[in-house]
Image (cartoon, rainbow, N blue to C red; front, side, top):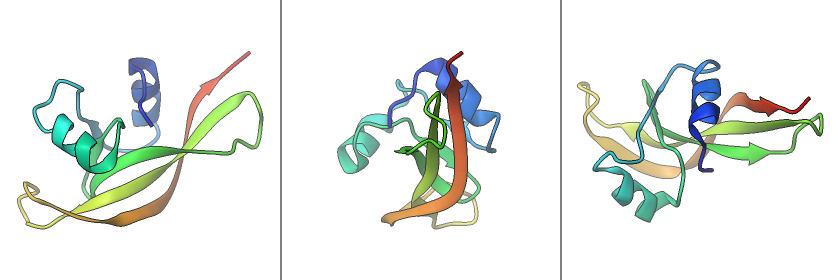
Length: 96
């Protein structure tokens, strides 16, 4: 799921991570591997936000999905794996 800047800011208030900017040199490679997403790095590795059905129709929510673990102690190398839902739910917006 590709997020706009307001959605990225809102997501980052709900889980601890760093969003990779669209102009980061690694984003095209990640997009070719995993699709067009906003990518987040945290202590667990590389994550994206996947949409889920909202319990209320006015709210857009998504689940954080981990795509790659850190494979070294310095957090500089990632090891991709099958997407794994983390259980972290993020609310992106509320329409009033």
